[in-house]
Image (cartoon, rainbow, N blue to C red; front, side, top):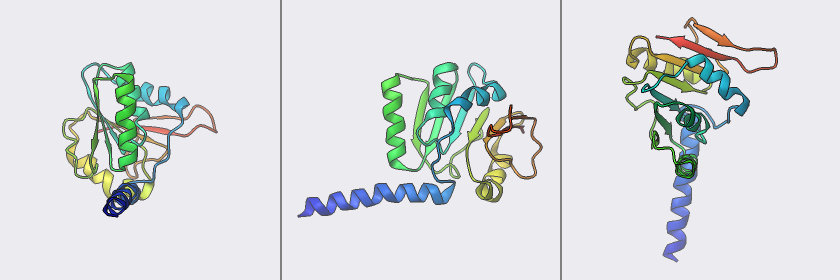
Length: 173
């Protein structure tokens, strides 16, 4: 009987992390795979740079960075099922330069980041993330936002090749 209670408690905690992640930053919505090349063309990731994927979801962006660039890549995720998926995908892809952490992005230290990528919702970007990035990122750090602008910041570049494409914004701090 105790085993049933333990399993239910673990299941509740796992599901609760999904809600916590959605409430904290954004619900998980995967980016379009076809947009990966546009993201990385904008941010021009260089060898040895430190790249953070905030709220990394299934790890698609972080794993792409690790596979195609010689950079130090970190994905931060709160939802445990997604984090476990990321770690499994990393293991299967044998990518040693990528790591995934169970971390609230608002409590993570981003001061060493050269590049930060995120796909958040406008209200959270405006209310919390914008101030964190302005406070912590070093001069010259690049920020890429998928789909939504950072309110009040001037984009250095925007990728939207045609009307049906999702915009991708590049900012330089």
